[in-house]
Length: 381
Image (tube, rainbow, N blue to C red; front, side):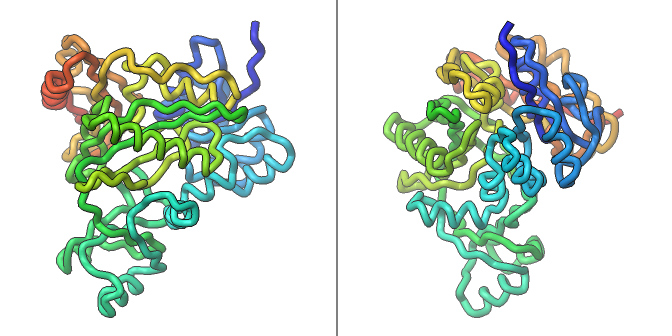
């Protein structure tokens, strides 16, 4: 029997759970560090350490117990990871890459320094600085404010179109970007292993929920021409190679009305824009991440079938124990695959699961997705 190294994952949410499911077919055990074994990956863990992935000692001690260390979230203690790497632990992505990516300001500086296309921006330290820049006309409406750190799932982002939106501004070090006039939001997931092999998944397009700022519909393949698809894929691979990432890199992109492609931001791990790969691709993004960090041959990224993914979000009016209303009706529809993460409590717009719809006709699949969205609700009773 092949002897796999012991793998540790910082974070035990839904991404960790889906990694554990993906490699269970190899009988490959994963260990997790997070605050509670009640989290989604807890029941599937080989061993579980309760602690904080933001705490130096917890991360350092956990790292000592495994051979290879990876993440399902960027907001981890990188000081501990740096010390572990110095002592010879294998860590993917590398601590300096995590530090770069979890600071959106450093991300933007990286793109500029490497001549990678991204929207215009300035860096601001506080809300007061932003207001002063508006007064002096160094900054003009409309713009997007993104906090440099701690933002995820639509949090830490404010679209400021005029004076009436100033109340939405956050008082934190921020990236202030031009509000790009975009045709589509796209994404490519790139896998890269230490020995240099690189593979990219087919380009996807994303439609966002207007309130939650989360992906509402994801379509694969993206409904663009081949030239745009090739350019987007080439750019995503260029970013992954420029950053020297090992593992997965999800590259979110803007397609402007002039068909220019701009980098929005990246994530060095499995990502919401790749959930459809479980059902529609030969190799899921979750299996691929493990292959990459172990320097195993990368699996095929080709589509077996077209796919649409919708996030299963907590109902905006419900907070409490989760109940999946309409589950039986959704499961009765051909081509519908329901993935429930196992979070005990639902909250407004919390990611509680996702649904992938597979088939041959994107338009028909999208109608089916809309139907499922109406049928299946996450509420509390």
